[in-house]
Image 1: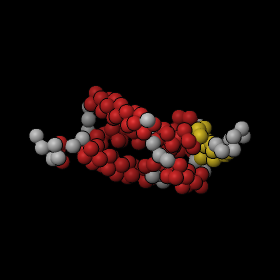
Image 2: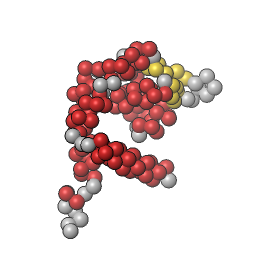
Image 3: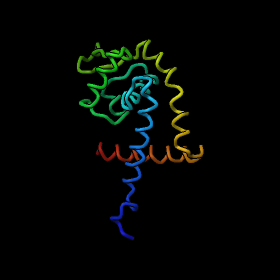
Image 4: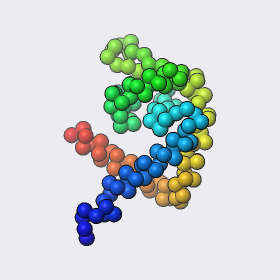
Length: 145
């Protein structure tokens, strides 16, 4: 076996799949005026309604330098509000606005459309999600070490 052959690398199919998935999301999110990374933030906000920027960054694997302009744009769109924590002014908290909550309804159609695009059986999707989540957790542990 040629260890350096492209088809023998685990990184390439993950990279190619990720690019393809994000490209499809871009088309689906365009009517909502959201980028893929803005969508990730909104998914967390719909779940939490309030979260610190630090915790959000950990959850979606983005650093504060990447998050700051993204969050400013979401605030300009009136989907979130950024406020300093009353107990610790170093902490910046994010709050979901009513407008941001209303966007949730429009976004509900995205996951089923994406699942159709994948053309995978439900069991395959579930296994894929389990394996990729495990991979992400393992990589995060390496970062923390």
